[in-house]
Amino acid sequence: MSLAIVDEALVLSTIDYGEADRIVTLFTRGRGRLSAFAAGARKSKRRFAGALEAGTHLRAQLVERRGEVFRLDGADIVQSFHRLRDDLPRIARLMYCLELIRELTRDQEPHTQLFDGLRDYLQKLDAKEAGPTSLLLFELDALAQAGFMPSFAPCALCGEPTGERPRFDPSHGGVLCLPCSTRVAGGFPVSAQVVEALSRLQAGERTPLPAETRARARELLNVFIAHHLGRKLNSVDFMEQVGTD
Amino acid sequence: MTPDAINRLVAQLARLPGVGEKTAQRLAFHLLRTPDLARGLSNALVEVVDRVKLCPVCFSLHDGPEASRCGFCTDGRREDRLLCVVEGISDEMAIERTREFRGRYHVLHGVLSPLEGIGPEQLRIKELLTRLQAAAVEEIIVATNPDVEGEATALYLTRLLKPMGLKVSRLAQGIPMGGDLEYADQATLARALSSRREL
Image 1 (cartoon, each protein chain N blue to C red):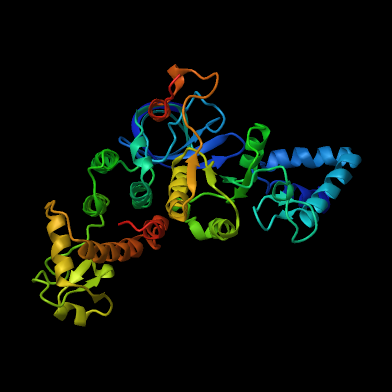
Image 2: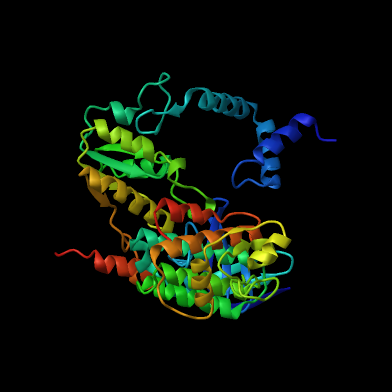
């Protein structure tokens, strides 16, 4: 028994399959992340014309097949975000947030707000309206939506202010005050200024951060994400190689 | 009970890209029925593994003596000032089929793929830069695919090559010959419009 559905989707990644086909990982609005078999996707110029590029926003025609991956019967492009492909730092940010969403989500667990957040971020990135601080904002929002919200203030253990010498401990959910961090082993010292900046971003403040604060905040989030996913994201290295954050 | 030799052959064939267990079995039984084909295939496989190697200059394939250069690099009729950078051998063959390009090649053996963790050090980029220091190249044509990874690779190369005072060009992108505007996607049409030419 198969069930046909039409849903909005963002292309997270694709892998070639056989001579002419592709397996596409989609982040759909109604059903979350799913994999779909796109027959003939590599050869047919008409069927999926340019639609299966990473990050493309689609209206996907899918068929659910019991016990198998979905079948992608057709895809209409809603927005291709092609302008961001003219700029290496923006490509790096695109790939980073696609990998982040692919790894943070599970198959067929809907995250409507996360889908809207990713789509809105890609629109801003495409329109050159999203700088490096916007990526941090997007990440904090994505982590919160996926249930991995890091705590920057107050102390993740006792709830008191984190003070002048805070430590970051991903295994305890975020920043700890000095007394708590001496009680539980692990973690590393972190600048109070960076903690405050991340805390303000988490509270919804939109002020761009200075480069040095951003770099430290990026290191902190990389450690936090790697701890929860069990590995460092591949695209983090690419961001470093092209010199962007 | 199936003989072990056949099981081993099926297992090896099934490791090929795009070949599943059933296809591997069908191929194995076909080879068993056609001993001439099987022996020819076996010889060809051994020859490919033993003789074909990468050119030390452009990283294309050739079957000449060890450390010698390929036909593209030794052909005196080709233009030294033009260098076409491609992702793989099949792309080099596709460009060669056009009979329009008479310059030299450089094969990267892949593209930057952030999601797969493929960075510049996994490609033949360092070798390209070393090669350019000694070569009389004036223009580099970046012929990577027009997808996100191909664009990322082209932009990355441009960053490295422009400061060397080289002209860097990209293959034109737009509507394919005999194509239908109706079926062209947003990105292709937008590229075609921005790269339009005066008649």
